Image (cartoon, rainbow, N blue to C red):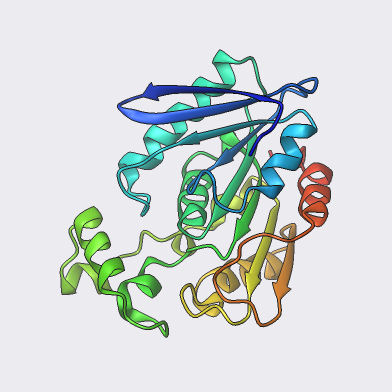
Amino acid sequence: MYDNAVIDRFVFEEREAIVVHPTAPSNGRWIWKAEYYDAFPNFEEAMVAKGYHICYLDHPTRWAPDSEVEVSAAFLRYVAETYKLETRGIAVGMSCGGLMSSRLAEAHPELIAVMYLDAPVMNILSLAGLGEAPYSEQFHRELVDTYGFNKCSLVTFRGSPIDNMKPLLEHRIPVMMIYGNADDVVIYAENGKVLEDYYRSNGGTIKVICKSMCNHHPHGLTDPQPIIDFVEAHFGEAI
């Protein structure tokens, strides 16, 4: 993974941080892998070879509470300033990484140039047992630990990315989204489809690829070129 790259590992606000530097000439751009640093990395590997930097920050929870969104925003600013990179970058959000990517882009659109979302969690209620997916005791317990939910506060929660999509459109953040139509973990109709419909109804820039008969895994594409083409073509559109 990341052959011919230089990898910095350090601590940022008591969290493990990683920055991968290309040995190819740097183009001054960065990619933030919001969760699961070493999962399905062929897109990131291809981008490092093109001169991109990759950054990652480990979190005590994968469910993107406000506190972790703010730490992530501070980390991205630190990376851009310390390594003299562009102020906006590409957010890669796989599964719960889609939750973190989207919540950060909604709260801090000035940091995100384009998003690549892959089977993204966009609706916490869907993963907490209120949707069509089989109930997961592990997910429910993690969400209770992260947000302090009880039965009443859970059903009235409105802090998911699908509840605050307007800033993404206002700042013209392009979205590349991939999902499997057999995904029974993160149900697309309850998550990514809500964002897709919102963008299409309001003139947002979005490209969606459906992988036939694919479950939640594997993420990505065997050939990441369509993802590369989209994020590079639309990198400068956000305002």
